[in-house]
Length: 287
Picture 1 (cartoon, rainbow, N blue to C red):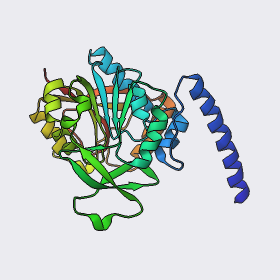
Picture 2: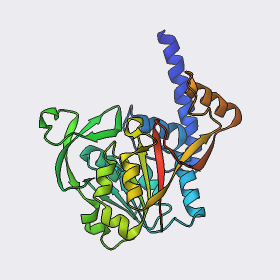
Picture 3: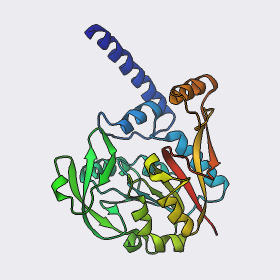
Picture 4: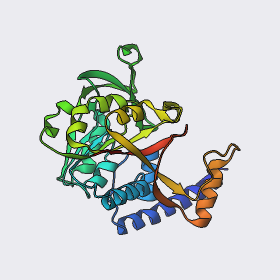
């Protein structure tokens, strides 16, 4: 068994070295990540986390004439998305509350003079709150409920929260894109940016977990609809088995189909949200 493991490790290292050379030749910027973290694994294999989704989104925004203003990255993590946005927007404001993650964010964005960093989190109020994180998935950090001090441990940290509406860094800027990835805190971030949304009408990128969706919508989607956002889209992979498929093995079938036919990414309209995970929803304002 030890010999088999050594062979697999050797082949894996050779393959990662080959992929790394490919990524550098393709122009992907080197990004430092946490060891054993799934975002780092995807960067090593694909050159960038959610690379195809980001490319499809920016292409759609460019073709729609919506690639303008500045970009705000709430929940910037190690800077994967911020560095990508810096190629397409004049300025990027990146918010990351976790001090340890912020150190990596600072390192990764240092070569880009159009990225400004804030070591804070966004919410609908100003104050301090405990942030819980998982060393196996730093991107899955989430705020603990207010008053949950007894839950603070070696895998949590107290962070500063501000509202986007109160940030001086955004007071005189037109925001064209607002990306929010804060593990269930999206609604409170948006409520704290109500004035910004009214003033700038930015395109909003956000994720939704299956447990946040009910009866074809979610609290975030409903709130956005009430505040001038009428059109919602997602980046979907093709070909694929329909989400209505009830039999087990859907992910395996999708993987096989995309290996054989080649995976394609397309931005499609979402009229009713299904109870699945949406890693990137695109909300467009009505103007």
